[in-house]
Amino acid sequence: MSLLALHEVSKSYGAVKVTDRISLAVQAGETLGILGPNGAGKTTLFNLISGDVQVDAGRIEYDGRDVTALPPHRRCRTGIGRSYQVPQPFGHLSVFENLVTAACFGGGQRERDAWDTAVQVLEQTGLRSHANKPAGGLGLLDRKRLELARALATRPQLLLLDEIAGGLTEPEARQLVAELRRIKAQGVTMIWIEHVVHALLSIADRLLVINFGQTLAEGEPRAVMADPAVRRVYMGMDT
Image (tube, rainbow, N blue to C red; front, side, top):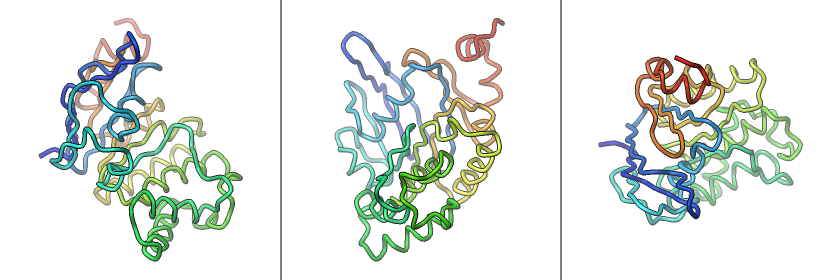
């Protein structure tokens, strides 16, 4: 049984169909990479999975349960964690307080347990030295790490990553990929939207490419990147 399954999921805004009958299945422990041009509907797809946006049609199943109608906080407590493309920490709180808040209110943990979780996640994401710093004063790499850490503090089985490497330098992206590999090794299932293709290819087990809200290609990463339609639409290359 798949950990996550989408069945003919659609979402429109007025006359614009942003997600058009997308179906996919993600197995436990798998890392699925998602590519597509700007405006292809990638973040909307995440919003539908996390419950930030409700589907117009179709069904979403998580861990064998229909979660289509569940609100975001309920989905989070069932094990769906996510990061956002633009980090959104509580800037006036410390890094540690951000993680405790995520563990308590996102993960439904008791405060004492949330402290333990926060300490573990600080170690896991390389943020221990920043624990008492105000989140609003962090540089971009550490803000990205904190966005990842807040999602991990909810103890997700499924982690949704929205362009977490975007804007980072090459060395910073390598550091982040190394951290994601460690998370993957712990058995966390991931779906990762990313434009930094080499970072995505270094960790993804499978790729999904979408365009105009529809599936363009899906499969083994190298084969997908060699697909003529993907090369034309995503990379702008004639074949």
